[in-house]
Image (cartoon, rainbow, N blue to C red):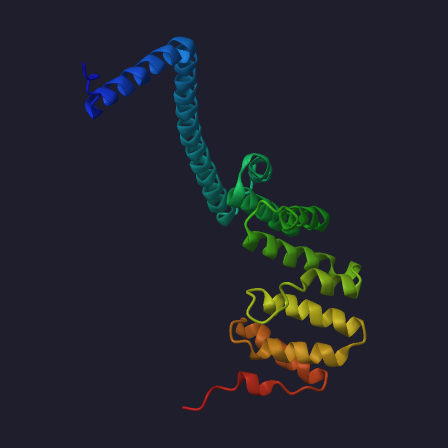
Length: 232
């Protein structure tokens, strides 16, 4: 009686490979043109992204150089055309460039006694969540200082609460304005304690610490020990 042929593993692998080749050939016939289009689009998109990044870097570099030139001119007391350049950078710039342009424009406005424009520029920076936090905090401090006399005490306190805390880089200035607002509320003891806390914080500039000692003393709290030099 005849025996059936021996189906070896090698034969099975050959059959499996042939089937896969047939499937790929059929797939290529059916979808080959679409695959080519997809690859081309991917390459175009990748090249476009790289080109856009390069253009963006060149653009940002040019803006930084323009800003540096503006600072040099202001340092030389040459402000001709600077306001217009800063306004343009405020529109076209990104991140730190835009923030620097807005803050510089606000400072120029203060020098020109245009406090409304200065306040508006600082407010724009403070309220822009896309700008770096250090710029936003600086702008909030300056905005609040310019508006202080027009604001209700509770509004000053609420606005500056995140900054008027020990360890925050703006604790000294924000704390002073917060304490002044508390005095307006009649909370003199709270204000005195806040002044004392400012005096004790060695990260606060010495001039602010010394002033806080005096203000705390005027409210009946002796914080002078905070300024005493440590024993040798």
